Structure formats: C-alpha cells, structure tokens
Length: 484
Ligand SMILES: Cc1cc2nc3c(=O)[nH]c(=O)nc-3n(C[C@H](O)[C@H](O)[C@H](O)COP(=O)(O)OP(=O)(O)OC[C@H]3O[C@@H](n4cnc5c(N)ncnc54)[C@H](O)[C@@H]3O)c2cc1C
Image 1 (cartoon, rainbow, N blue to C red):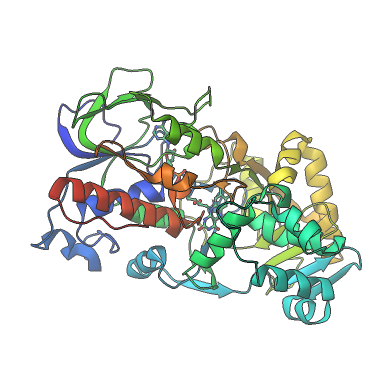
Image 2 (cartoon, helix red, strand yellow; image 1 turned 90 degrees about the vertical axis):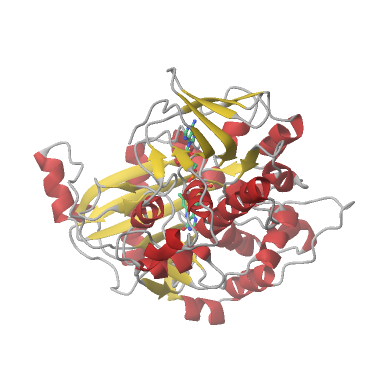
C-alpha cells in the first residue's frame, strides 16, 4: 500500500521499515513478534492472546521495498544477491535467529575467515594453518581476543591504530592484518576505530561467535517481518511535527499527505537526524534537542563498498567461503550462493540476461573505511581490473576470460542512509544513550546506532526496535519498559 493521508489517528507511527522499524512495529502490534504471521505459521495465535493489547501501528518507508539496508540486486547472478548485510552474527540470545528459526529458514555455520591469502608470501592458507603457523596472524587474534580494559571516564580515548602502534608496538604486518580482519569488519579504518566503544562492544557481545549464512537472501526475512503490518511504501518523510502535546503529524515529502499518531518511533538512519544539509535530512518541529543532534553527529557512520564479480566457471576450491587478503588491493572476499530466484531478473538487454544466466559462481569483495572512500573515487574499470588480477594470483589461474557480470555498490551513495553502518567511534562518550533517549513521551528512538551495546548488526537493530516499543507500551499502558 502506498497510502496517503488516511484521516485516522494511529496509536503509533514508525518511521522507517528497516529491521529496527519493522520489529518495533511487530512488538507494538503483535503479542508474539518473534513468530511469523503468515496463515498457518506458528505465530498465527499471536493476535489471539488475551493478555496482549495491540497498538494500532503504521510504518512509513521512503523506498519501494521493506528491509532498509537489507536489499538485493538481481543483475549479477541468477539468484538474489545481498547488497547490504549477508550474515547472521551469532546464534545465542539473538532475536533475529529466533525469528529465522520460527520462519523455518535454515542457516549454515561457516568458519570466518576460513582462509588467508598472505600477499607477501603469495600463500593461500587455511585458517587453521595460518592461525597456528603464522606468528603475525596468531598475534593479531591474540591482541583482539584480549583487548585491554576500557579507558576510565576521565581517560583519553584512543583509536585502534594508536593502541596498536603506541601501546602494543605491534609490527607493521600485524597492523595490516588488523586493518583487513578487524577494522574492515567494523566498517572503519583502524585510525577511525574508537577503543572505548570497541572494548564495550566486546563486553556486551552476548550472541556467541558462530558465523551463519542463511539458505536464502536476507530480503526474505524482511518480507516475513513486514508480513501482517500496515507498511506504507514510497512514503518519504519530510517533516515530523510534534509541537502539539500527545500528537505527532508526519508530512510526506513534496506533498500534502499527513499521517497522525499519538506516539512516534523514529528508526531512521542517524544521518537523517543530523543538522546541516544532509540529502536525507528530516525536519523536526520543534527541532530535536541539541544534545540529540550532536550525538547523531558524534557517532561515525562508516562507508563500505561491495564489488561483485560473476564467473561462468568455478575457479576456486568448492569449500572456499571467506578469504582475508593481506598486501593485496582488496582486503576480503567471500563466496556465497542462494537458490535460483523465481523473480524476474533486472537485465536491461538480452545480452545482459545471457551473462546473468551463464553465471555459476559469484565473488563478493567487501571493503570498508578509507579504502572504500578511495574506491568511490576510482574509475570502475581500474577497480575491476585490479580485483580480477588479485583473483588471478589467489586462484592461480587467469580469471578474466571467465568473467560474466560485474557490479560495484558504494553505500556512501545510498541517499537514504549515507553510509553503511556506524562503527565504534573515538570520543563517542554517551552519545548512543543520548540518541536512544525518548522525547516528551512522544518521540521514541530505534535503529542500529541507538544500541548502547554498540552492535551495528541486524539483531542489535531489532533489539532497539523492541526497546522503543516497550517504551511506547509503558507510556501508553503504564507498565515498566525494558532497558538496553
Ligand atoms: C554493506 C553492509 C553489510 C552489512 N553486513 C551485516 C551483516 O553481515 N550482518 C549484520 O547483522 N549486519 C550487517 N550490516 C548492518 C545492518 O545492515 C544494519 O545494522 C541494519 O540493517 C540497520 O537496520 P536499521 O533498521 O537500524 O536501519 P535501516 O535498515 O537503514 O532502516 C532505516 C529505514 O529508514 C528509511 N528511511 C530513511 N529516510 C527516510 C525518510 N525520509 N522517510 C521514510 N523512510 C526513510 C530507509 O529507507 C530504511 O528503510 C551491514 C550493513 C551494510 C550496509
């Protein structure tokens, strides 16, 4: 449903249909939000629970699909390829894993990384080989497994690069590995990664260390989360007016449509809450408190790029999953494949359709931080040529003649997000707590950046949705809210 003004006063309006917003809406509207709502699925009894009072909830989303950063492309392989998140991080205490299990979707456990390509030695090693025989690889994991205690409140925060160079005096090769293994995963360069939040994040990580790959693109989880909710797509928010006590009026960009509700959950990317002229900025009337805007500016949104290269032949070992590369152009790539998609492919010409159809394997390079910013400025041809040369070296075969499809996605160019995900930020202080704080029992905040445990992951985003929904329910029904 596109939905314009509907004249109703909703109990809750949720801004943004990413995983945080969708789960917030489920927690407001459904007694068992972790269970799918499709007829016949185990969650069907959700709405019949007597002790649960459902809130009437509408979700507003600017784009034409639900899921937010969870989205797919159909032009590089005969299956839907994840443009954003791809993996489930951990299977313990994870609301995401519970939901996926309830949906009946399966996950394969993977070792991450399962291989290292050490460019200095031109050696492709299994993780076990590298972690037992290579002193640099051993040391980098030891350092990150045993992070120091968090700096005290009065102590200076430092970057991971300062910690490694000044405190630990780590060798250059270890620093390069740390850049490619840890900083890349956190969506930043070592020189931008804040130690205090990094340490807090590790302490707060309760999901276990399993690395899971779903048996289908994550978009299907987004669709299952949205099932049963009133989501209005193509509804870009321009203004949120909360000047009248107890009422929020949300105004659609470039139009006169207005949605009115008593409570509002804001689950927009933090870049939308910043001052200045960001392309995705949303206006609030009255303005958001200065402390909130400053907090949105204090937390850094990292950039990430994915480079996809499709092949008409499998040129790599059949069990290869994720390779961390050192002294190479690009730091990491993985190989994933999903069931062929029954959906129409997005080929613009018959030649392109042919190339997609011929694709039997896909390599996805993942690049974050400063290198992602550099890649944004490079000519695409140069990026692809160098990426393919890197694969020639690693697979030890000429790859170019087998290439079918190529695509680069840079998250800094995604207008509605303006980045990939937030990362542990130097001198973040209590910014995430300030970001999460509600305003006048009317505006409530969710979204990955508002998780005070610093988990820029899908279950973290869903937890913030649950927190905001609990706060709304507490404000409406007067019961205790849950804290994160
Ligand atoms: C490349 C990449 C790889 C990642 N890898 C992983 C991974 O493997 N595992 C993992 O757990 N996490 C991963 N993440 C992080 C994960 O994607 C995020 O933490 C999560 O999706 C954030 O959800 P959210 O609901 O907070 O934000 P979003 O998904 O950004 O949702 C916000 C929504 O608000 C909408 N919106 C914005 N402005 C407006 C407006 N004006 N009006 C209406 N709607 C608006 C947006 O369109 C969006 O749908 C990755 C992210 C990226 C980008």
